[in-house]
Image 1 (cartoon, rainbow, N blue to C red):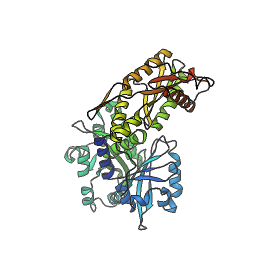
Image 2 (image 1 turned 60 degrees about the horizontal axis):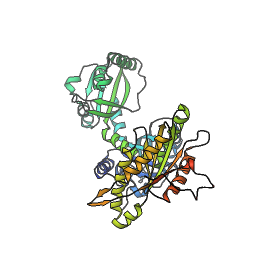
Image 3 (image 1 turned 135 degrees about the vertical axis):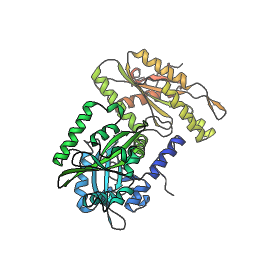
Image 4 (image 1 turned 60 degrees about the vertical axis):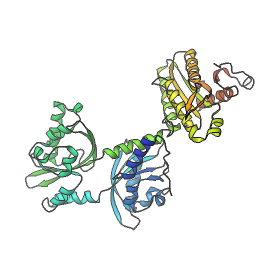
Length: 449
């Protein structure tokens, strides 16, 4: 039996995420920085006709037809500069058949790519059907779960199917014959609505109707609807134009992607956070430290400190009571660390019982000492876990930014050296700044509470 790479954290949130991931109507996948597949949900496996085990570890380019490879390579390269890329392509299924797909990709800070995969066979058929014969494919339009609307040459709504009623909350009888710009404006979040925006929408739609061209045509874009009951809904819209004997018409397909967006945000969150403690993980910590270094050098006021801490007797607790008990202890320690910091500071879990803190904008060394003392005092308070009371302490190593020479790696290395020294005495903190190569092995940690 295969296992998901996502570790268990909060049971409720993980169950919710796994439910969305497993039941999503679109394929959801994750590709590593070498282009190999490292996750694919059941819908994605169904689209490609492969099992998850057959897909994982395989280069994604293996599944594209030869005539699509250059196009896909170009789109992958554009992810380095664009926030999100959407394109249409094709995959070769396991049975050798070709399936048209729409792919939306986003590059994470660790250079992995999170992607959404959609089988657009039905959408292409539906779009062509609308162009070729509205009457012939009327039943298809009505039965489609996607919203389908149509606007005549004057900009009035002449089609609003059942799916569109469900997504927008607006009944067909209430929108038929109304200007599409008025309907679109009413569906926008209330905070965005203005007379200026309404006029801009009107002009944009009229330009499309006059010329048959315009931005946002023939490729999907995302938007947010606010229904009359105040509920927000994420949607994806694709509009196209087609010519009649009296001018241009606009057709559109709308899909509710609220659940997909929730799954995407959750997957992105999981990639950057520790699943046990919900703190930033090593990757997110590194990103925040680099940003903090840039701010410290640019603003030139106050100073930056990195604290690396290790729980002194965690291994003994784990060995005596078991890993489940140790996990509870780590969760409590993580929550306590957050109470010691300001909103601008960062606490992260590096792995095991090792945590890191980024402290920005310190006025003087005394302020840094006070935070270190608060951390030691807070962590050393007894913890009640499953009826047992236990006390753990911590050893803290502190490095201070030296603007002319330090980078993220040297700050962490210096904090690690200072923590190693502090751990010889336990329940204390030590500044690397006060250690020297000649005295490191003999100096005494005298910063205990």
